[in-house]
Image (cartoon, rainbow, N blue to C red):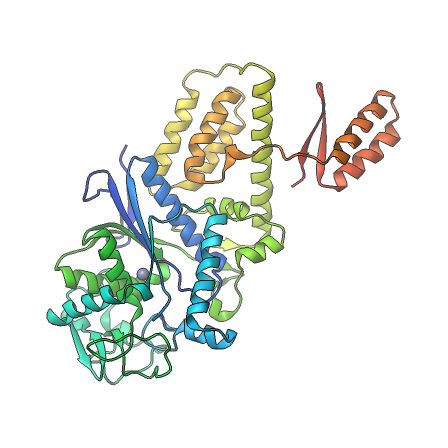
Length: 468
Ligand SMILES: [Zn+2]
């Protein structure tokens, strides 16, 4: 079966092809480690994880590279404002390196708790200054960059089709009022490859260079590291939609100018998460982190499940009502799976109608292969979960296959152990029920349920599940 993805570059859904047989080279823009990731950022990484899992399920060996921006990203995505990490260091009275490593660790823990597959290579900008400088040299040699007052700028006018990804008009781009005027630039849309003689005299993380002691611009790190680890042909490059107008537009200009050809085949972008009608943004100070969600009693898996319900190219409206719904849906699915497993132990698996399982699998692959239609996959999942014509055995095997993509760890769920105290209470209640002492048994039931354990009276005795 073929794979089809929406390519931002062409604005079309296209058949996915790789340059090297059965190897998919994937680059995903990583975090700027100056603050906790908000759940909007994490939504993008979940989308990239779904993409990576899909490529693997379709038989590709995926080489996945993700960068960590620990220097050079200014407040604006363009060349204005202060360095985000330096600002955090001043705020928290720590060194920039301490800030960067602290938030990097936190970010990687968040990824782990969301069950995101770890990239093959995670690379930090500050550890690739040599590669970055080498690329800048090449751009200067090829006349795509110019040096002025110790800064190096990419000359946008020299690069044909600069706006191919954003499709913005050049004069629209240069009228961006958020960006400070820089008299050194030939064109205000030119962007910095290397800062040395800039307004950032207090920059702590600086390196020697032929153009002056300084630090790289943000965009060049991705071009330098992507091509170092993946070569000059990259199958897919991803990020959030906010990267389209500046960061990815500049990456294309740098890489394609350096190698004299198109370096990235597919550009894929995840849409925003919208919180109370405002874009989630740290700068507006109205953002939620995974830790916040945990404090409100949600597991990372509940958030992951919520994200699966909205296609990655649609904006996702976040509120706690929908997160609660996601939690109870996922928990009820987990309880069903636990029931199926014990059913399997207690009796022989019943028979399925031939071909039904295959039909569900076909629908799964069809939805997955057409631009990661995960919401459809969830509805197919709930159809077979409730389908009385297929066996528990088949249901468990379908759950296994679906979960390779969904990444919810569905089959790993086992019935949590109860404390000895609760086990004794359940036994006592069973005794009282045999003696038809309903009032007393109801009181015990209430006590057990107050501790979060729900009871179910069955032919084989009392069963229980966790309240959600
Ligand atoms: Zn990037």
